[in-house]
Length: 156
Image (cartoon, rainbow, N blue to C red; front, side, top):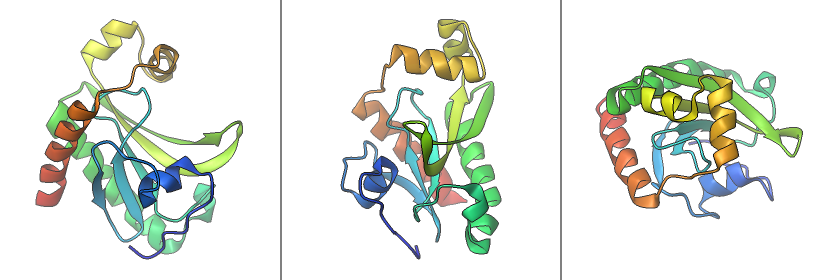
């Protein structure tokens, strides 16, 4: 990794640096990016792909960060497909905190039939419903799925 500039008060930076406990630990990293399990209520197996460097806008990514991003998102999405076997894998950028731009991170979420049936929703409506419910996966389940992800990503 090249640059771990932290931004005081940034949860995304604090999780990467170890200042805040990260259930499941770091799943994977490249020179510029880190992959971690989501700490929010988006379900077991949801990963975040985020730059180590505190970046607020995709337009501010360096050439190196940009070059790594596409192949990394593809690999992480393939790992989610292999481990969770969802109907679809949602990949979306989130970058707001309190209504202002925050540290960018790509959410890589397995959309299973079980989740869609449970919440009677899909796409953005599924994510909203999951945030409304607020249920977060247990730490043991997160650790187990992270171990499975590590095995798949390390084999690539």
